[in-house]
Length: 159
Image (cartoon, rainbow, N blue to C red; front, side, top):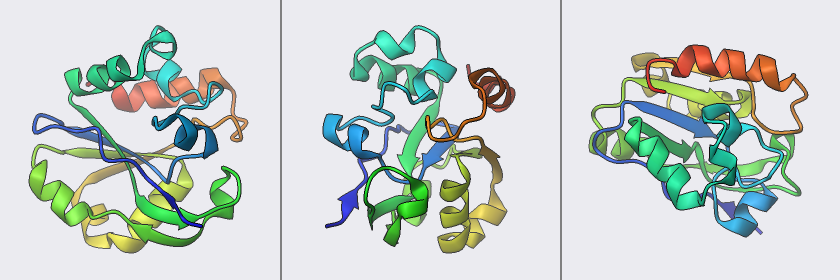
């Protein structure tokens, strides 16, 4: 049975787009991006964010002109590992970019998000400043401090 991504968190003011692959099991259960408590995404963006309600986390993103979405609209996957993704279907980025013309930079949360975007949207990949960042997933074992350092470097003009 395919798993589906969520609608984007975005508005017309966004300048940065952060893309994951597709939500993991806990995120799907909670219907929240990066819902797994051990996922470092919200902690990397702001130390106080993990304890905030999801609506406040999304408001934080928008207040910093950051959009959030997934490359894949749907895929089959047992568990939450990106390596288990099969039969992927991409989201409609052509329409998304038309609705959000202020996007200047795209950051990928992990290699799978980058490789899928590049596969399906090569023209957009070559048209935008794109950066692959280490996955914030607890399955990616790079130390939190190193992940944060790399993310901070790319997000410094926004946060």
